[in-house]
Image (cartoon, rainbow, N blue to C red; front, side, top):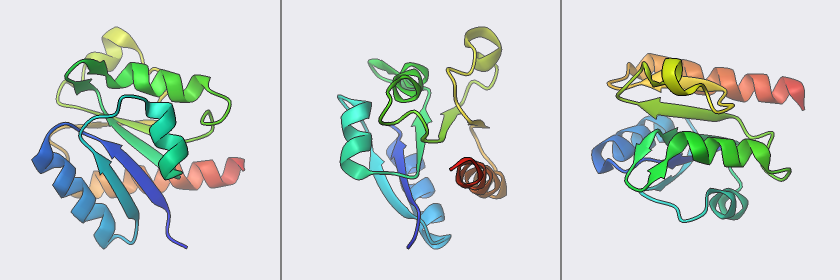
Length: 125
C-alpha cells in the first residue's frame, strides 16, 4: 500500500508540481490550497506525512504544524514545512516540524526529505 501525503500549499503551480513529483514516486497525494481545520483535514485524509507551506493567506503553516503536533490523534504524523523564506526557522523556531524545504526547491531534496521523514516515523512506530 502506498503512503499518503497531505500537502497544504496556496500556490497552485507549486502544489501541482509537488503532487506530480510525489505521485511519480509512488505516493498517493492529497493537495489542498487551504484548510479551515488542519486536524479535521488530517483525520479525513489519513496521511502518513503532511507538507505545509509556511505562508498561506490568513494561516501560518507553522501554527498548523504546532496544532498537529499538539493533538493526541495527529501528534506522531511527520510534518515538513515549506517556505520561500528559509531563515524563518531562525526567527520563529521549527514549530515541532520534522523537516524543512526551502523554495525554490531541488526535486531530489524533496524526495530525500519525504523518504527520510517517512522512514524515521516507521522506525519510531
